[in-house]
Image (cartoon, rainbow, N blue to C red):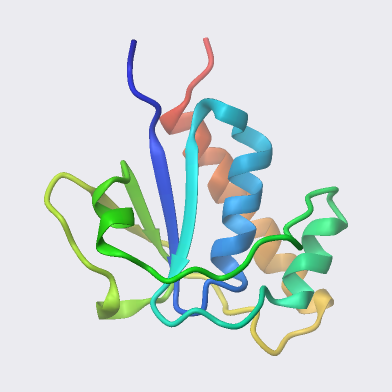
Length: 135
């Protein structure tokens, strides 16, 4: 049996983009993909507008908290998806890296976060189709 793929979403504060991506992947892929998120400089709390935008779709990320990015989290992931963390992301051989250029939801209201959320959802859906295809 193949091992379960794992995805690590990384952004600077681990408060908006990476939390929404992790929320979508957990919600849409279930146990088919292991999900992690972290930040190079974690914020104190998840972005309230991101929480509200996800709640509109029935996905609750309010209990999540920003976590610090560790080399172990990177090394143990199948795919690492960065979202604007620049050079602060550690690189390990054998790990697939991707960079998703997405607007930062920090300081934006829920109206401005919705398009970011929807873009993340489309990318996560494509990622699931790639990593955990169904027959």
